[in-house]
Amino acid sequence: MEELQTKTMDLSVSGKTVSCQIKERDFGDMIVFDVFTEDNYLFTLTQQGDVLFNEYEMGNQKNIMDPRELNMLIEMVKEKIESEPE
Image 1 (cartoon, rainbow, N blue to C red):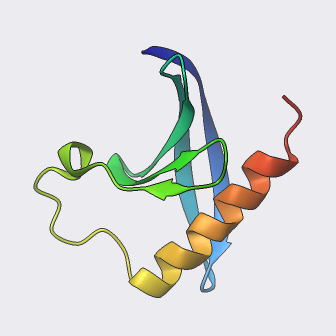
Image 2: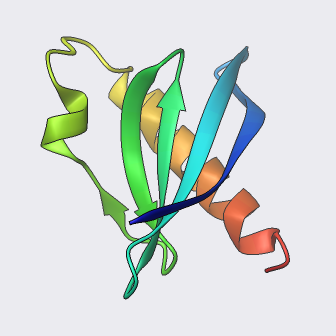
Image 3: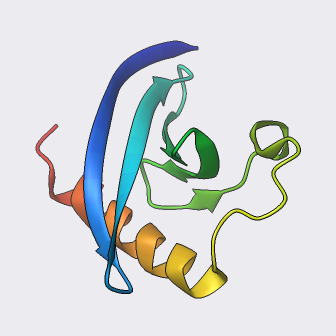
Protein backbone atom coordinates (compact mmCIF):
# COMPACT_ATOMS: atom_id res chain seq x y z
CA MET A 1 0.00 0.00 0.00
CA GLU A 2 1.33 3.39 -1.02
CA GLU A 3 -0.02 6.73 0.19
CA LEU A 4 -0.27 8.99 -2.85
CA GLN A 5 -1.53 12.34 -1.60
CA THR A 6 -3.65 14.02 1.04
CA LYS A 7 -6.05 16.86 0.28
CA THR A 8 -8.30 19.00 2.42
CA MET A 9 -11.78 19.96 1.20
CA ASP A 10 -14.16 22.35 2.92
CA LEU A 11 -17.72 21.29 2.10
CA SER A 12 -21.01 22.91 3.11
CA VAL A 13 -23.46 20.43 4.64
CA SER A 14 -26.75 21.47 6.26
CA GLY A 15 -25.61 25.06 6.59
CA LYS A 16 -22.28 24.30 8.23
CA THR A 17 -18.80 23.88 6.81
CA VAL A 18 -17.21 20.46 7.23
CA SER A 19 -13.46 20.22 6.66
CA CYS A 20 -12.60 16.80 5.22
CA GLN A 21 -9.18 15.29 4.82
CA ILE A 22 -9.00 12.93 1.81
CA LYS A 23 -6.14 10.43 1.84
CA GLU A 24 -5.51 8.79 -1.52
CA ARG A 25 -3.98 5.31 -1.28
CA ASP A 26 -2.86 2.83 -3.93
CA PHE A 27 -3.21 -0.88 -3.16
CA GLY A 28 -1.79 -1.96 -6.53
CA ASP A 29 -5.06 -3.22 -7.97
CA MET A 30 -7.24 -0.47 -6.47
CA ILE A 31 -7.00 3.20 -5.58
CA VAL A 32 -9.14 4.36 -2.66
CA PHE A 33 -9.84 7.65 -0.92
CA ASP A 34 -10.15 7.53 2.89
CA VAL A 35 -12.22 10.45 4.18
CA PHE A 36 -11.70 11.89 7.66
CA THR A 37 -13.05 14.90 9.53
CA GLU A 38 -11.36 16.21 12.67
CA ASP A 39 -9.30 12.99 12.75
CA ASN A 40 -12.47 10.85 12.76
CA TYR A 41 -12.75 8.30 9.96
CA LEU A 42 -15.96 8.71 7.93
CA PHE A 43 -15.80 6.39 4.92
CA THR A 44 -13.69 5.07 2.05
CA LEU A 45 -14.52 5.80 -1.56
CA THR A 46 -13.14 3.67 -4.39
CA GLN A 47 -12.00 5.25 -7.66
CA GLN A 48 -15.13 3.73 -9.24
CA GLY A 49 -17.38 5.55 -6.74
CA ASP A 50 -18.24 2.67 -4.41
CA VAL A 51 -18.57 3.55 -0.73
CA LEU A 52 -16.85 1.29 1.80
CA PHE A 53 -16.63 1.44 5.57
CA ASN A 54 -13.47 0.19 7.27
CA GLU A 55 -14.36 -1.23 10.68
CA TYR A 56 -10.73 -1.11 11.81
CA GLU A 57 -10.53 2.63 11.07
CA MET A 58 -13.82 3.26 12.85
CA GLY A 59 -12.35 1.82 16.03
CA ASN A 60 -14.19 3.02 19.11
CA GLN A 61 -15.93 5.96 17.47
CA LYS A 62 -19.42 6.15 18.95
CA ASN A 63 -21.02 8.77 16.75
CA ILE A 64 -19.64 9.56 13.33
CA MET A 65 -22.16 11.97 11.80
CA ASP A 66 -25.89 12.33 11.24
CA PRO A 67 -26.68 9.76 8.49
CA ARG A 68 -28.44 12.37 6.30
CA GLU A 69 -25.42 14.67 6.49
CA LEU A 70 -23.08 11.75 5.85
CA ASN A 71 -25.02 10.84 2.69
CA MET A 72 -24.80 14.44 1.44
CA LEU A 73 -21.08 14.51 2.24
CA ILE A 74 -20.51 11.24 0.35
CA GLU A 75 -22.20 12.66 -2.75
CA MET A 76 -20.18 15.89 -2.56
CA VAL A 77 -16.86 14.07 -2.18
CA LYS A 78 -17.74 11.73 -5.08
CA GLU A 79 -18.52 14.74 -7.28
CA LYS A 80 -15.28 16.53 -6.36
CA ILE A 81 -13.12 13.45 -6.95
CA GLU A 82 -14.79 12.65 -10.28
CA SER A 83 -14.37 16.23 -11.51
CA GLU A 84 -10.64 16.43 -10.74
CA PRO A 85 -8.20 15.71 -13.56
CA GLU A 86 -6.02 12.65 -13.04
